[in-house]
Length: 415
Image 1 (cartoon, rainbow, N blue to C red):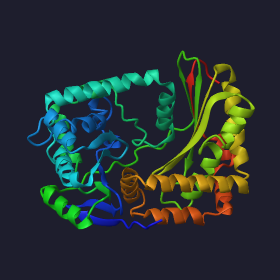
Image 2 (tube, rainbow, N blue to C red):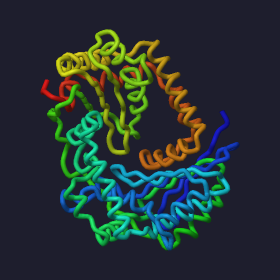
Image 3 (tube, one colour):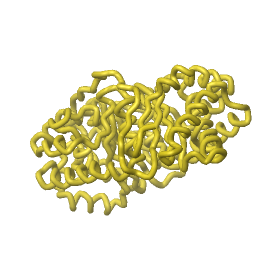
Image 4 (cartoon, one colour):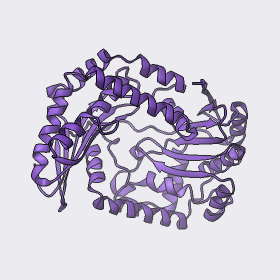
């Protein structure tokens, strides 16, 4: 594997820039995070859902370009792009041929510094946000995961980002302009670029494009601990959707990699994991089951989902809890080897994508404060031992922690 060496710079008043040239690449990928996340949205009817609307609005014209002109300009460059909002940020993601990178950075800079926030764009973005909010009732699995976030994560980081009808209705052109000017600042912003790029050229270009950008945003702070406990959302569905969540190490915690591997053995990495084998295949208790690990800058969360019929939901939950308690006894040597191979494969294959590398270096910069090369990430996996994984399993899945796991059930009857 040929090593790629990412470089990190501070440009334009405090923007953190990470650039990874990839030999042989023909594309350039951009992941630009600005600190306008859902955790900083106004509460309730004051404008809850602001970040989701702004994430769409900033793609609807910038500078002297209308929404159609802005979109056409990106299309002429052959850019594939998207915008999204999350707890801490709005993220602009784009990929283009290498020769189009200068033009892409110019258009994205205009979107951030001079977005066209007018009545037409706000109304269109609000309508889309309202549709997304209404659609949650049609996706009970997604709804269950959202409800889990509300009780398992501290406020204000437990907001799902879809907003409320009253909050979305309260947003105005003036309020969104003021909020964008206040929140979208270079200090707290992160830009990751990977592919056929020249670090010095990118840095000089951004210094020119962002010369007028300055200031820092106010980062949201924890205002209340996680609610925890259990929650039942009664819906007339044919299935019961069960979610369990247990606190887990944050990304910078030395135990995070061991935790990631044990979660892979428990309920990820295909159909050979324990939950799939024991709950679905052997007992036929559910049609879907799995585990995931959300590993963030400030906290982590182990989540388990199972979809079952109402009459078998209680037995499904009991079986899942039993597997969690059994996992505390550790994983076998064979499970460990299989998980290591799977994890390394997924990392290396993702490393062949410029978009994945841009996202990885931007994510590293945010979550651990430094950027790792692909080789370094692989070496960390190779250095992991079975003893470390089993030590983490014993610490993370004690009977007390399993018993206190947050529980959400969406379905026709309580367990």
